[in-house]
Length: 329
Image (cartoon, rainbow, N blue to C red; front, side, top):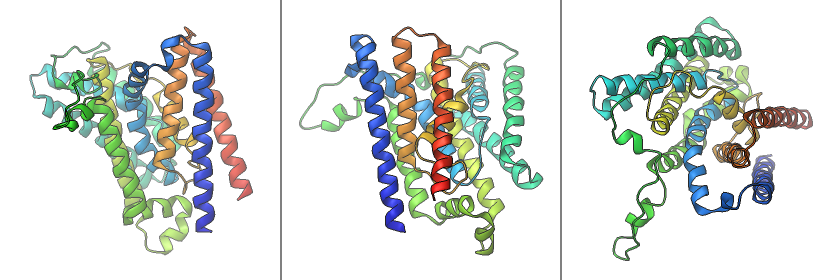
């Protein structure tokens, strides 16, 4: 049985790689010639950081059997908090911690409401989706918040290229990608190891697979769910930091619809909405597919509604495939 799941997972990842190649080939054929250039790949990697980091938390939530619809609103709220902190002459480090802490705080709110009120995550996070968006607009007085320049603005900017030196090759290596992309990679490795190698990771999978059986085995269900939503909130706060770095200002209307892209990326990556199944690598591939579609549509000059329709179709198809997979199992 264990070998079957490994084979199934590898098959799913191979399918994702094939799907990305097919999408990439289509845009290579239809989009402008610079679509397949190295510079465009670097641009796509910078744009992907926001969705990719948010998918790390969403992967844990969906594996545990939950969902979070408040991701986009929390990202917007975090950009406002960071901008206000910098505007108040706080150091970039303080602004960074305030932003990530705000994401974790909203994750804590979601977790408490879900575990204490015993309300399904869909309803709770639908409510906080509106609540957080309203709080962001109220905090910013319905306007964008300008802030002083700092090194936070450079997290998603391409660093200046450095020449390769045989004695110091790491300097050239680190300059290939922005700090935000490297941070995404490190966080992804950490989450993957956490899910595979730690007791907490096994508890997340157990809760999503069969909550009643996990409870009988002594798994602290409420504490696990609470910890998952707090952890996811911290990652959403980090995604908000990347959003701020990209915008260089606080925008309470930013990241509208981001939660749909994040959920779609995780489901495309093989996670089951019934819980108990999912992988970090699959989610990252799903996020990369979404970014490729978004970039390709933009370079072809297609209207935003086309991308929205494609995203919606992908979500429906992914959920249908998930349901068929569950019935087959």
